[in-house]
Length: 48
Image (tube, rainbow, N blue to C red):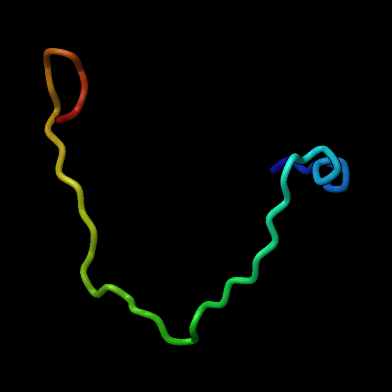
């Protein structure tokens, strides 16, 4: 991870947007798992 000069970045910014975001203590959580299926393509070495 790299760090930089935050004050210089803000000074050089054309626009600075400041907002507050609230996340509820209880929120929806999906119970389903996520999965992917891929098939190798022997012609181009990619996946379908």
